[in-house]
Length: 173
Image 1 (cartoon, one colour):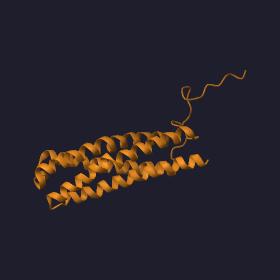
Image 2 (tube, one colour):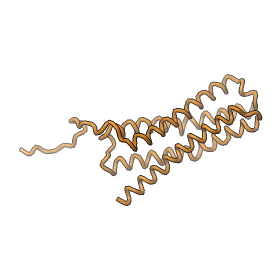
Image 3 (cartoon, helix red, strand yellow):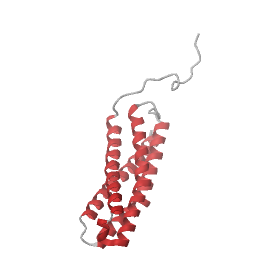
Image 4 (tube, one colour):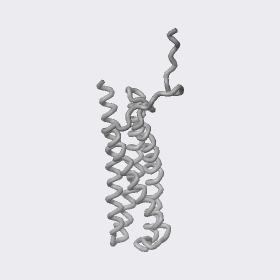
C-alpha cells in the first residue's frame, strides 16, 4: 500500500507540474500579446521555450510513466475502465502538445521575434504560429484539467469483458 501511495504521489506531482506549466504558458502568451517592447516579447517566448525543453518534457514523461505503472500495478488495469481509456487518449494529446507542439511553436516564435522584434506581430508566419501556440495552450489546459476530473470522478464505469479481453480460464467441466 505504501508503494502505491508513493507512485500515486509521483503521478500527482508530475501532473501538477504539467498543469502549472500549461498555465504559465497561458500567462506568458497573454504577456506576449500585450507586449509594447521587442525585448519583452522575445523574453516571453524565450521563457516558454526553456520551459518546453525542460519541465514540460520531464513532467509529461513522468506523468505518463507513473500513470502507466499505476494502471499496470493496481486493480485499475489499462483497459478495464472507460475513464482510463479516455485518460490515455488525452495523454497522447498532451504528449504531442507538450513535447512536440510547445517546443516547435515557441522556438519558431522566438526565432521570428529575435529577427524582427515588434514587426513580427505583422508577419504572417508569426501570426499563424501564434494561433497554433494559443490553440495548443488551450487544448493542453483542457486536456490536463479533464484528466484530473476523470481521476477524481471516475465516470462511465467498468467495461464489459469480451472474449479478447477476458482472461483464459479452463473449463471446469
